Length: 297
Image (cartoon, helix red, strand yellow):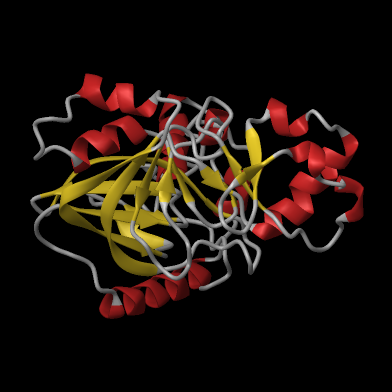
């Protein structure tokens, strides 16, 4: 800890004093851990990473920086997957950042690294449920409890998009295929929360709110099916709509709490880069490391 400047003095004392605790907090902050000054399991894990491994990690990330295409001026967003954070830049300078939840470390659920532009916002969105989730999660729950659809505000549609009565469906007959579509209506239980930020892409990835706020209290936040859940969606909406005087904070809050979906096109498309950096230097000049959650290093 002394060699990396977390501990300002070279001290061989066996006493865990306030200076050492401050050093542990600094070390935890640099590694994206809960900065409580307690040397728990995760802190011990990072303390035991060999310096040779960290040097190799730095080399890998330097190569990423060379090939990365990131905006350097104007307004733009950056999501760093291993940091589980969204960074908001205004005129090329960091304005604020917040926590995010990214995709699980499973091949079909990983958040993809790519660049795009946010084109529009959907307030009080429907959640159009992917077929994989319908088969693996929704159908088993309905087969156990026929009130599940009503409880979670879901409805069934035919292939033309018409809502049909769930009472006409023989739920027990479907195991691996389901010939209908499903969506979750706007409301407090909606998996997308009250707002989503769209940059249409072939990966079907976007930023959105979430009702599961407790997940932001975790230091490792890879729980989604690939999309990115944002801790501060209202603040992000205000930033993206900042040039449009019609959308005050009160107006945005009203739109976020409707029972009907509404799409708002942005007057200016905002670049967004989803990156995978496990090492970087922060604004304070401190070298940061994060766990290689997807094994890309």
